[in-house]
Length: 222
Image 1: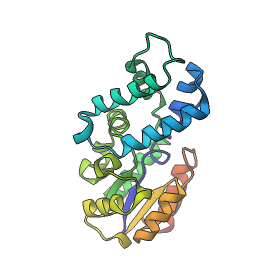
Image 2: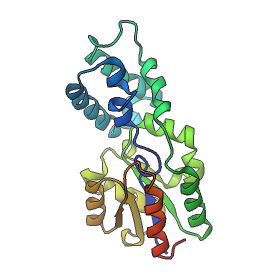
Image 3: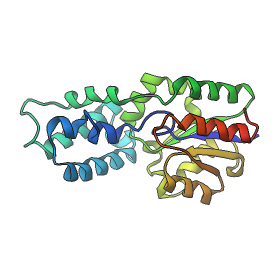
Image 4: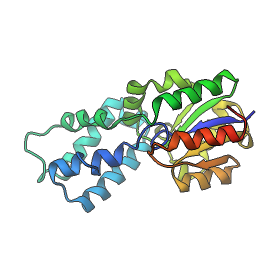
């Protein structure tokens, strides 16, 4: 029986970083930041923290504070003089939204009831992961031992095979016995190269859980 692996952002929850930084009601809009320059800087710092372990940053709270402090310093001329990292941190939870939460939870419970191993393999910083886990109880749902996040590995899924090696090792299964759901083509291609049956699903869409359910039904896993 195949093991099932999910990405987080865009698959289990709506994407967070892009809407938080660039979407309606997000940081760029609220503070009238120069969108092209801010996009380049924010995306680069997001990747940096998604590949940086807590051994280098301290606690996830310290990493989060440092991240937003750097953004404030870089765009100080646009932010109010009295802004603090906490002002931006407080916006984060407002952008954490599950995708069809009841359906996703039902799918995961149904898989586990049939004895299917379920895991997570996701590119994410320590602080975004901590906030998602706290709000949506992912570790209770999946099991912390079956969750691999890039900040603990030091590279993204697109960078090589370490993320996929880590999740298959955590699940105790070979790559050919896994099905992986992700919303980014580059991650699908890398998983395919590693030997995982990778399925591209719509990103942050009401159709995401439907696509997952359809694949699992077709493979008689639900």
